[in-house]
Amino acid sequence: MSDPLDLTSRTAIVTGGTKGLGRVIATTLLKHGAEVIVCARNAPDTPVTTNGREAHFVAADVRDAENHHPKGACPWV
Image (cartoon, rainbow, N blue to C red):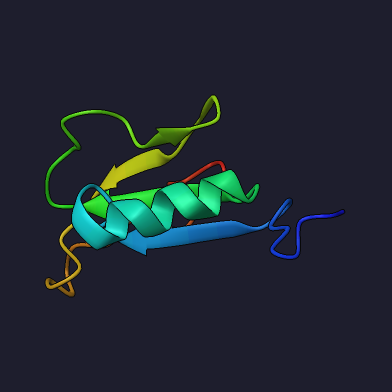
């Protein structure tokens, strides 16, 4: 049976994805094949991983409109 939530070839950005519910969401997306980018103010204590796959981390404070990355700053997107 195929995965009903097949996210292969999809990219997900999870804000606050380094701990708590955001980390659970990021891990679930990884599990289903998505390339995952987690952003938070601080790097995670341990990498966000599952099944040998690891999410990319970008330090960002989404509360600050001036804190953004120029187009192309994330080469995996």
